[in-house]
Image (cartoon, rainbow, N blue to C red; front, top):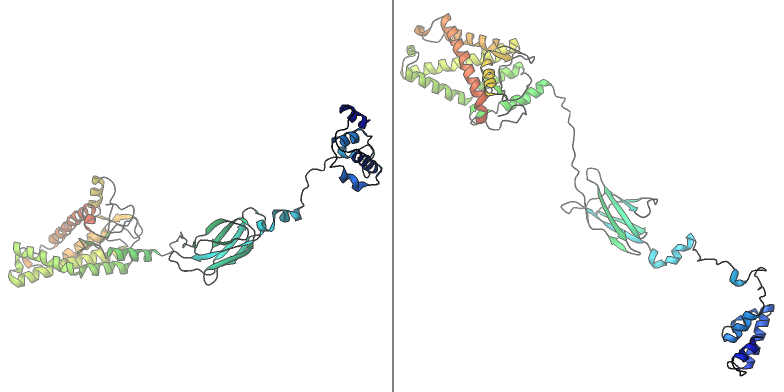
Length: 407
């Protein structure tokens, strides 16, 4: 049927392959259908379209190995083959999976090498993979071998140093040199609990007070700029009185006062000349020494009172002025409470009474002179406190900043 149709279409004359080719094609098709010549299928491919037409017109016979009722063309497509997990590396090729190495050095800011630094390597794309760790050697070098290609992260740590993190990407078979990693000393914040006793704290503050000098010269030991300063011990009270009395500047100031009295002929019973000046000098120094010793050491130790002026430094001018004048008759006790300044008042009376022993006879008024000197001492103390509160600190260099006490 197929041959007749082909001849009819060509007008009775066969145009195409010779007849023996057609006969050979029929034989091949027949052998293929009966399964006698499976290898002969390859001969069909060079056949021209007439043979394909005849094959299409022939009845379909199930092929060997194909279930009945299902042709080769009807078999389900198996789809693209998926490589197994074990063969994935083979598909990628050895050039894409060759391991490499990661190495480098750990140094200080000055370029010195660090030995014993803990270095960890983690594969960023494989968080489940175990972290590898090494320590830097004597040359500060670290080295990781057989590292799979891909992104990685290095973590550097050592006691006393701030941690460092370095990231990179390793290519297949690459020897990756990490730029020199600089470890910096960690900034530590320590909490210090002060467990020193009040006496120890007072001693440190006392040492600071011994450095206080107006204009860097004149001693200014009997003032504290520390809010709620702990009390002085008896030993510190005597030490402060002695240091004030024997300070070289005190001898110079005593000479100035004696010279003024000499010029004004105060206490004329002392006379003039060198002898009169010496008597006045001795009397002025004795007044200061006795008053300081009794009012600044002996009585404060017995009565548990603090002989120092506690600088206020805050509030209005009026409140500070009233506070300064009041401090001439009140003081802070060693218990931290304010109380009458018995040490200063009694010390002034005692010093005035003792002064009657060395003042000229005509200048002695007995009890009257004693109380007069005491009152003068209180008024002088109030004036001195006003100067302390508003002027002296500004003229005293290197005073520590104690917070509440302000200029």
